[in-house]
Each structure stands twice: as structure tokens, then as C-alpha cells.
Image (cartoon, rainbow, N blue to C red; front, side, top):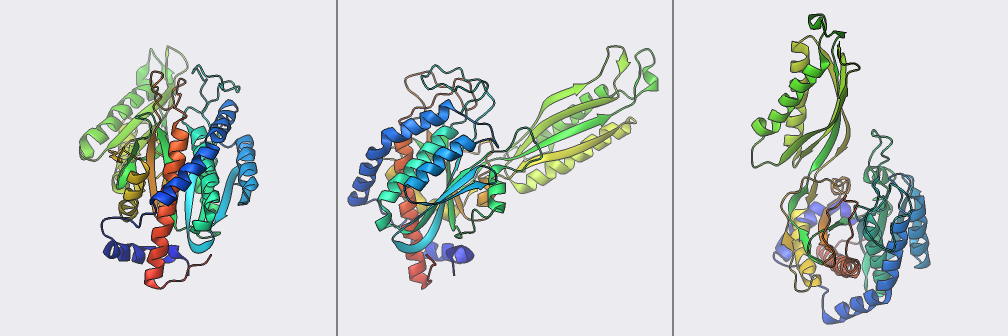
Length: 438
């Protein structure tokens, strides 16, 4: 029997066995070995990051980055699979002893933004750059594979490194990279028990930010098509003005969050684009708009979607118009498994040195890591990458320039946490008398 099928029972068992701290592997010997392995590959991972940064690929087109990842994982002797969900790659590292399987997710896609940062490894692909730091994600995850490969004789279990594609921006109806990877079995062979994920964050270098429970919002993109009836501006009574209807719809939608959602329950509804009309002297018969809904829990998500439908229908049909409302891409909220977060917090703190983990309040950005967390227990954290040598730029900025010193820091933190997690889960199964498949 594999651990994943009995995890809820084991988490309750863990709460009694060790209510306040994990089984730490952060003794001096392990810490020294991790430091030594990180130092060996530190500069190599920086070079890989710069290579990926110079040649960024948009979501769904990450084949060149995937080739780099696959070749590096193969050179380590890992069990490598490619072309998952398009360009996805996995590398399985088996420890010397049987035990659970831990997953580590990293994204490979870049963004359609023209880079403006003054760096020698600037993007050579016009209008495309790694403005979200996924180049660092790849380098940190690869570096972690290098370090743990050097420590595989001390590993109880296995680690699967998951490098996923993004969502093709040319196809709004296409599923996210994580969802497609899951459907193609990335969590099944071998069965993955726990998944880890992280994201760079333009705050204090090396600082880890996380929290138990929901930390990132669900994201639902939507499209509204408002249908009126054309007429000459000299005879507006003969038509149904879709532009006027659109204005009423927008006002109605904006009151949903402010008047129908509890103030302590974060939610955001944004109309990002609107288009309609053909001539100045014609009553428009069609207006199109789209936007994003962000919520932190499923109940609020369903409630707001239901109220949106009612608001658009009531407003348009009351004045003789019609509509269509379509939710296109949906990503659930990212929520850290409470018991897993509590058990790994000591390792996160120990690996962070003199910077203890800072509690992160709910953030309205989204991440498709949530799809993994809907299948198995997950832990997600942010890693500070603020570059103290230049003025800080936010994520998605054309000037985004994270400090590369965060790469070895991230590798070290993940190496400690993964080893600690494997040790904890192995001891749990041993104490319960459960035999794990290797």
C-alpha cells in the first residue's frame, strides 16, 4: 500500500506522535553536506538561469527550456519523462531506502512582456521575458535535484521533480499546465504523497513567507457578451443601447463584492477589457467585455458567480436586451495543508538561518499549484528575491530583476525541507507498521 491512500489517517497519527515539531534532519552533518553540495553547483545554476532567461518561451511553447531541463536531469541519472502535457518534464530521484514520494513543482513559461531591465543576459526574444521569475524556479528546482542526488544514499523514499508548462495564451479555453500534467499521470507513477511548490517574491532576500490554510486566491476569467438592438442616434427609442446596458452591468457587478461578500472575506472582481460600437451616430447592438474574479474560498466563489449571472441577466433583460456569460479558465485557491505546514515549519525555519518564516496574509494572485493540492497534501511558500543593488521592481514588471543570490538560498531551503519531509513520513509509516513501495 502506498502512503497517499492513507494520508488522512497518518496526519491524525502524526498530530499525536509529534504535536509541536517535525523529525528534523537539520543536524550538523546533514547541514554541512547540503552546504557543500550547494556550493559545488551554485555558479552552474546561475549560468543555467541566465541561459533560460536569455531565451524565454511563452506558455505552451517551452520546448527549448524543456530540453535543457531534461538533459540536466538525465545527466544526473534520474528517471526522466518528457513531452508531458506538451513540453512538461519530470525527473524521478530514488533514494537508497524505500519510503514515500515527495513532489517538487517548478514552472518553465515566460510572459509576453518586453524586457527593460539592464542586464547582460537580457532576453533575445522580442516581447517575451521571464517577468514572473520562472527562470529562477527552474534553476532552484534543478539545483535541488543536484544536491539531493549527491545525498541519495541518505534518502528514505523518492523525489519527483515536476517541470510544468504554462497555459497557451492564444487558447483561453485550454487547461492550465498543472491540470494537464495531472491528467497525464504525473502524480500516479509512482504515486506522489506530498507536493511542494514555491514562488519568488520581490521582498527581503532569502526571507521565506508562508502560512497555514488558504494563501492564494482562486482565479476565474470570464467573458460577457451584451446584446442590444441597433438604431440611429436620432431615434434611440427604436433600439436597445448595448453600451448603456454595459455601463449598468459594470455598476451592478461592482456592488456584488462590496455589498454581498463579507468584508473579512477577500474577493476581487475586475473588468479588464471592453469593446463595442461602430459609429458615433449609431446605437450599439453589441458590447463585449472580459475580466477576472478572485476569491479565497469555494463557497464565496460559487456565490459570486451566481450573483454575477443574476446581475447580468436582470440588467440586460429588464431593458429588452440579452446576454451570454461564460467562465473560461478557472484555477482554485492555493491552500497549505494545516498539518503538513505545522510539521515542516521547523525545517523551514532552520534552513532559513536567522530569518524565521514570516506569516503571509491572503494574496489575491493565483497559481495553478492549487490543482496538485486538490489531489494530495501540499505546501507552498514564497522566497524573497529583492535585489538590494537596484530599485525593486514588482512581479510582471519589464524591469523585474531578482537577486541571483536567492538561487543557492532556495536550493538549500528545499533540500532541507524535502529531506525532513521524507524522514517524517518514513517514521510515520514505520510507527504505523505500514510497508511502503519503493
